[in-house]
Amino acid sequence: MDSWWGLGEWSGHRGEKLSLYLITCPFCGEKGNFDTAFHAEKKKPNGHKVLNFDTLKCGNCASYVQVFWSAGDRLHDFRMVPWPLKLEKHPEHWPEAVGRYWLQAKRNLKDENWDAAALMARSSLQIALREHEAKGGNLKKEIDDLASKGVLPPIMQDWAHNVRELGNDSAHPAPGQEPTNPNDARDIVQFMDFLFEYLYTLPKRINDYRERSNS
Ligand SMILES: [Zn+2]
Image 1 (tube, rainbow, N blue to C red):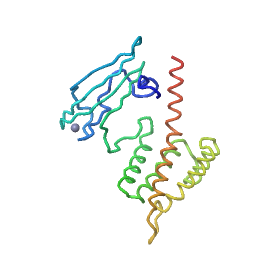
Image 2 (image 1 turned 120 degrees about the vertical axis):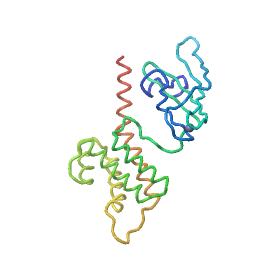
Image 3 (image 1 turned 90 degrees about the vertical axis):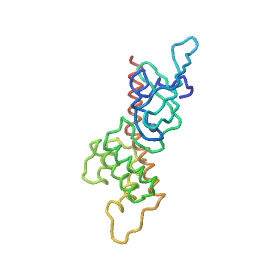
């Protein structure tokens, strides 16, 4: 997005009104329980695009949050400040199981549970591959299977094998084993970000683009 006037035009959430259920109070974590304390809007000169400037008051803890939002034809999007610091959801177009493991990997990273972060990341990788109908019965074969079908490009195949090897120790622990290196755990989780971007977010964006150009 290269202008704020583009907010809600190319990506975002369904509907042309701000969906309060998407907003989580950054202070108490309550979702969608807000009253509008202030609203202002700015209409684009010679156009009908509107930018909305809302201050919402949480019905649970009485804190305020500023929400800037705008709608396009069928979508709307928003930015808020402050935002919840706790990572509470995965992107909604990811499969639920993939997102659940990914979220736990992220949280374990934040809490410095390096073994658990590596393990959850490795598991989210495996779910995503199986969700793409990888065959083979173990992670090594599943990675190679999807690479042979062109679902994973060679660079991702290589990297997926690195993740598999790094996560292997946590998945199949032995007595007296070394703890997972924090940098390895961070690398593994970051790979998940890239991989899921590639497997889920990129196709969705291309699809959204096609829907827009056909309408
Ligand atoms: Zn609150």
